[in-house]
Image (cartoon, rainbow, N blue to C red):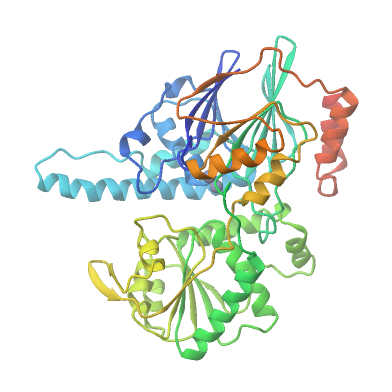
Length: 500
Ligand SMILES: [Zn+2]
Ligand SMILES: [Zn+2]
């Protein structure tokens, strides 16, 4: 087996690792490079022919992991995209949205280019390319053995990072040898609302592991949420609105889940919560369709007949008109809107109308990349430009750090030391240099051999590599990892039969 590390090597975006097993070409994720340093050329370049790719194994729907699949389709991909069913559903709204952003960006650039007498450029892909690429997606549940071809089986395990997010166990068989490779995808933060905690995996020869927060610790999420409730109470008392710039998919639903608790405990009164983002609204209904993946606490709400993503005083705006109406509200509105870093979308209108009012509050609930409007506000600018207009920052600004979808240093450590047998080698990806070096040092104290991957590094694994599990061990391992409480007898029998 050959692994070529291509994207998210010494950086966090553009996730993509290329596997060659037998004569098959397999991609682990195919994400978009994002943020300040994202150069168009990087996104346009593939070190393979799109029509030669047999499979894309997709860990989760975030655009930095899935965002170039429509481009792959546009260039002639004829294979399959293998992911969980919830990931497939989330991609069905997130990828067309990404296509729309690509189109808008190209249009904006072309206006400039035409004024300079230059030729117009095409968008990386269109919303329509994204919609058409969805026909190649195949969704599966967690914990099932999925045979892709003679020589490769995979199992998705709940990564607890986003609805549908998965770690991937790959079991490759070549010349009677079995190699177990685990791709961590993005590892979730323990205790996240709605989602289960990240799965522990028992056996691996090799691990490709994310290290986003390999050098940092998160504050407690519960504390952050309590602060959110008191920020809202204070702001309502002062006679203002609360604006929450939020990522539409994942973070918005987590915030709603927590607000639901406070509203139902009668702790939050006299306010209306608006979700003002079409993508967030669609994503929320996908979350509602996949209740089977909720954690115990969220399931308890459902058993009581109470949907934790619905509460009195929660409004999902639909039209642009309804969104504009929110600008007239002076007091008692909690507006959750995208984009999370305030770079685009309806959030900019809400900032324009509330940022200058000292009685209002702006609450950041996610990471703010350098160079974004969100970051400028968090860093304490007294004036910012919104739609070309200078706006004074008089509102109270809060930055809640605890709400992270990613495991922190402790969570990553717990996960990698959770294997029954130490993996032979761990390839560190999806992190900046500082975080990776610090985490490498930490796990080397545990005698775990690791390597910080360089972009385009190729590693050949296989010679003499094998973990042979007896049939009984294998079966026990599968059963232990199955969510038997939520599976039918037939489903369990089917899996067991395949193994014997
Ligand atoms: Zn992610
Ligand atoms: Zn990621």
